[in-house]
Image (cartoon, rainbow, N blue to C red):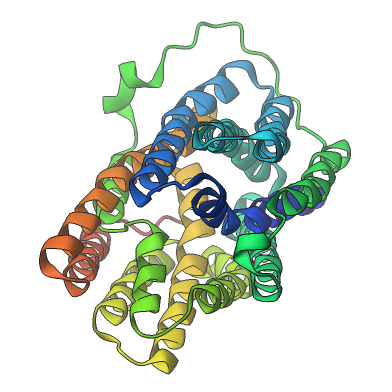
Length: 386
């Protein structure tokens, strides 16, 4: 539990730092560098691609060399470099470099961190362990967003000193790195036998794991960037600043519920959380499609937080259970990479559908794919013995 708590604090401080500046970066680009929406999209697309492609490679390196702590630490260092580059950037190319550095770090750290969590948890409490980590992670997101809200609410955008906030955001990033002093890595005996890349034996992997990777891809294809749900909230009357509060409500809901729902999956099985989680996503996206009132939009964001709590930690625990012990890092990385690869066309499809047919259609499309994913899991996914 000690390791899991400190790994959670690493994510808490890092996400607090990152989300202090994340909502400000688009405004900073527009206000000081005249960046267009196309440039914003290019920056996010390149940055997320870099993270997605690195996750499976990082997982393979984790399994190959069994140096999880140092690899995870090296993935959190770019979170500090990211803010430093933001401070000194003088063009949108500098901001692009900063975002790529940040996302590359995320691509490196995700798999070794998750393996550290799995090895620090009791086998029968895996869901609770990942749930605790996700809870602290989302709490950092929520507090970072809340700070951004007060920053934007109290300052005129045109005269605001963005660089000062970027410098202040370095403090929690350093605190996150400091937490690694207290993390103990479980030392595994180094295996001398040659490890073959997992793709050479992909056909021998558990059929349930391959099914779940397919479901992840299908589901994520309809799960577009959160930018679209924030745009949808604006379309029903929320201001640019108040939309940030909606994201805070979503993050706090996920933070509060992630651990208890993770523990629940330990008792009742992953299937009984994953299937309702995908159904909850369908309900959310139908809400984003058809809700027109502000109160109901708040309710939809709360349900969106519930969906996140039901899925995020539970799916990682499920992948760990299905993966061969020597491939835990690789499979966690592969699951994240599959989701990341699908997220790129998902956002493109959503944007095209929104432009061509209006705001309702992309959300109905996402709700439909999530419903199909839930049905596949319901029919074909086995309940693992606890």
